[in-house]
Length: 305
Image (cartoon, rainbow, N blue to C red; front, side, top):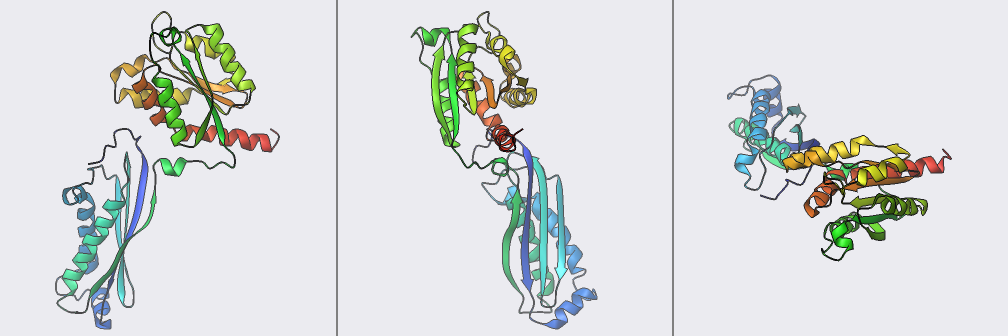
């Protein structure tokens, strides 16, 4: 199965539909009057659809098992067809569209099986996904301009040439993947004054986003939070709370990260861990969601607020 461990659980929803066409008007009458020999067709299809939803991962090889937290199956008995509608919801890392479509298909097959003794011309015309919601795509803002970011590496060893920067490069790659231009790149030692000066310089230049990497741990030289906090106009604590929660699901040591995030004017500043893995996981946890901050700032600027 595809690796989804990097994804964040979000509310996911899918609606699927299956259409079962009959060839005889008498078939519809039998359904409505509950005269089908095999029993209540609509109720049997509803129950079978629920079973189908919950057993999807057992039948589709590459489908992830997931918690089904809401499911409903309904049948609309029309003049020449029965339209099955299935809705599934969960809070998980991947979507439920296959569950919804599998439930619809099982319900449709149940209708076919129960009605074929009285109507040899029944067909399952189509099974389709009507809509799906959830995941990062639903939270990806669109912009009418190119977003500009700065990536600042904070490390004594990298500054001294004793170690290669990998975390900053990884952050830059992730930004490019989501369509954010890396307008500035920098490197400073673990010196609060130099760090604060560079971040202030970039914020004054109008960057939308500044990401630092390094100095958020507990060693004596890790002083990035202490350097950044005084120059923030407003802290946004929820950003790093989300990052730490995401990280701790993967590495228990994430609880010791002291990263902070906040605004300097219209610029969002986020302090990421210095390890490559920590930086990448923080990016996975926060993007593209946090870019909504830029959308809010742009809107406020246009309205003169």
